[in-house]
Length: 143
Ligand code: UDP
Ligand code: MG
Image 1 (cartoon, helix red, strand yellow):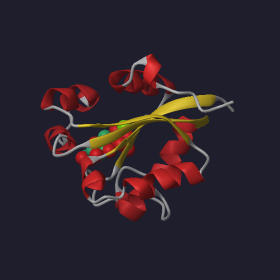
Image 2 (cartoon, rainbow, N blue to C red):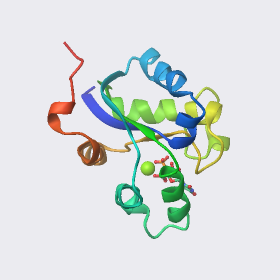
Image 3 (cartoon, rainbow, N blue to C red):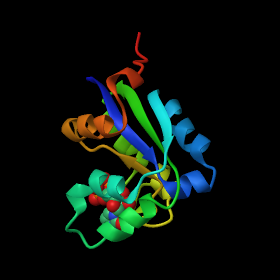
């Protein structure tokens, strides 16, 4: 096992629905720790850049519109195997295909409005954390 950091985003719909606490509680009760956090209102350009890997996909403009419709909470989660564990806690992209008990199954509305983002690999975690946080913003939580 490896101590990892991963980027988590609580997306605009979940912030608007006032369920930040429920979502964070799931991370904490699974043993992940919050090493950094802040509210952000993404500009169109920032959302386009963050999701640039999906630029050619048919859902790109809908995704960018969603991610800019209101504030988001960006967090660095820390823990053993945090990247894969966060993905497991989140569940599949499409809430209808996600496992019961995951965040997306329990709280997601549809494939676009699926409440949370999580980095999918060590390289993307590093790049996505650097997109939002300076090294000094991150407070390691392990002893
Ligand atoms: N998305 C969408 N339609 C799709 C696939 C993805 O709107 O058919 C959105 C959804 O919000 C998803 C994000 O684009 O979380 C990024 O897609 P990805 O395939 O990377 O899914 P994730 O890694 O978030 O599970
Ligand atoms: Mg992804």
